Image (cartoon, rainbow, N blue to C red; front, side):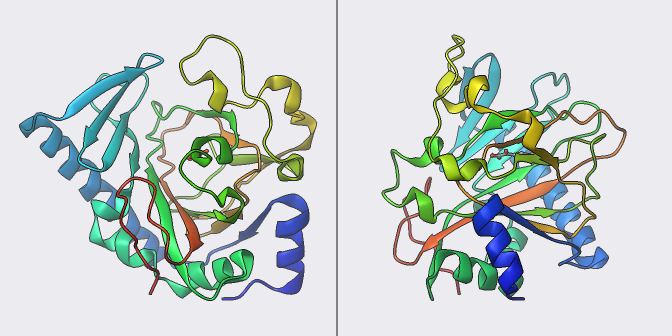
Length: 259
Ligand SMILES: O=C(O)CCC(=O)C(=O)O
């Protein structure tokens, strides 16, 4: 479960490390069912409640208590894009936070014996409609809510095989070493959260094609994103972000210690 010395050194020098098939096919099937349950439950709650709805850069968002739901950009049929924090919606994903296959490597990365949750996002990437994620760093999203952004590492767990066609995760190798980079200035509402194109060296891009059940550990400063899902197959994944113990989670304001 632990990262080897060479995996730890790759994480430090390149800003990411991939462990293939950490979860079995059976576990991936249960994650996929969990994603389906979460989507159905949220769509039901949105229909029957007076949820707060808003648009950012034309895209639809709904807040249900502490949970933010993003709808797909081109969706005509209410497909979800992202749910955060998904552990508040589906108990299977709350249990996953404590899985030693994720938190043991995270203890090594954060150099902390005890951890807490920062946030957990479920990204659906539905077939044909799943939109891409522009190049960005996570740190700028979080720097106003956390004083230890450098200690907020992520792990993405793939529920489906991921490849270039269905919009696999991609990173700019080693870009975390530059720290916080300037944002775009193109007039979008969320412009500042996207990394300025002059600071994105696409020649250092790594497409992370990996089988279902793989875990991608990545640094909060690494420039990353993904393409649209152009295929007939989904590309579902959860991204969990940990932090040292004792600190409150991003959205709930409660401490969710890792057990
Ligand atoms: O799911 C993806 O393809 C990328 C997600 C991402 O970059 C993010 O949630 O910060």
